[in-house]
Amino acid sequence: MDRLKLDLLGFDAGFPCDGPAAFANKVAELVEHSWDGGADVVLLPELLWMGLERFVAKDDPIRNVAALFEQRIWPDLRQRLSRPGKAAVLGTTPFVDESGALRNRAPVLTDGRALHQDKIQLTPWESAFTGGGPLRVWSFQGVRIAVVICLDIEIPEISAALRGLAVDLILVPSATETLMGVERVSRCADARSVELGCHVGLCHLLGNAESGLIDVNLGHLAAFSPSQAAFADLPRKTQTEVLTEGFHCLSLELDIEAIRRNREAHGETDPSKVIAAMPEIEFL
Image 1 (cartoon, rainbow, N blue to C red):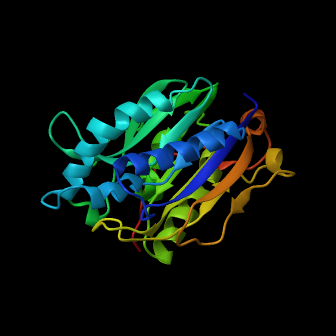
Image 2: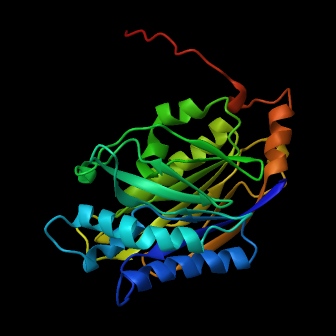
């Protein structure tokens, strides 16, 4: 695949609906609408499934959302959205792993396969969750992709782990409640594009939800490409204004061939081609 069509979907987690099935149907309809409109890959934001909290018992809402998603939502969603030649990162959801630990997990459907990525580094208000890897790199139609969740895109060591792996696209589902959070994620996503020589797509959760974890949400939809000669005539930064509510879509056509041309180019300053040892530090 030389060009990949990517839809970034801003999702309002507090939109009015009458139950979990209606909530899941809204997610599925948005994905299907994007696919039917030509998108190859769809990205939805972090923690969107916490929008189900209003429908579960309040004794342990995060684990109750996890159980609701795994038992009632995921089986139907996986069957409905397993479409050959298409991929979707369905935001993130609480998930209880084999050890009983809660994970902030991104379910991924790609060419009919079900994959996932867990958030590695956690924010202070994710105290109920357990972080940790591995960081997974997967292939879709010859395009090498990694999902790096919100705070993880801000962590240089996670970016460094991807260096030299020929990743073409990083997808960043995010949830933030302040402009400072939006800026941190966006500015770091832009930097990762430069230092790894890849496309980066970012989308934020929106709206006010009946949830202690995602009560206020704002952000934007954004995409970044390397600042290299292969991209001189192509958009290198595309983003919406900061959004606070509603459903929004940013559709992009990413030039994957330009990424490959850039990897083969020589004679240009390119941080993605520098494999540097950690310098010694000297205090003066």
